Amino acid sequence: MLAPKRTKHRKGQKGRSKKRSVETRGTQLHFGSYGLQAMSMAYVDSKQLEAGRKAITHLTKRGGKMWIRIFPDKPISQRPPELTMGGGKGAVDHYAFPVKPGRVLYEVDGLPEKVAMDALRRAAFKMPVKCRIIKK
Image 1 (cartoon, rainbow, N blue to C red):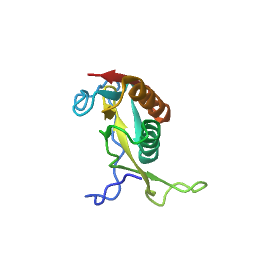
Image 2: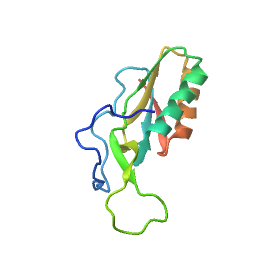
Image 3: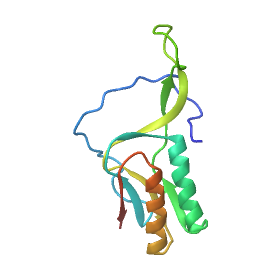
């Protein structure tokens, strides 16, 4: 799974989301001809990102080229179940990327349109956000 090699701080803070915020960076296609764009907000963790990558590579039979435009670098900590309050913050459970509407998650190129659309549609099923397929 994707995880940062080194981090400045082992455990991160949650942060607060702005209700009507949309993404300003990473909203356009830069590498490929087709892309998967998020339409809602959620944390995309490394397992979901890997599942989407596998779905794309399986359907394209490793043809063409694929880019993953996000990297999960936000540590998500979790306490063990049935533990009382107090005793500090839990250990880092996994890493995630906070996705806002408009962010491009995957890009593909060098494939026929039908294959690219189907591969990105399959990857969209693996994501916790509502997605749409965009093309250049």
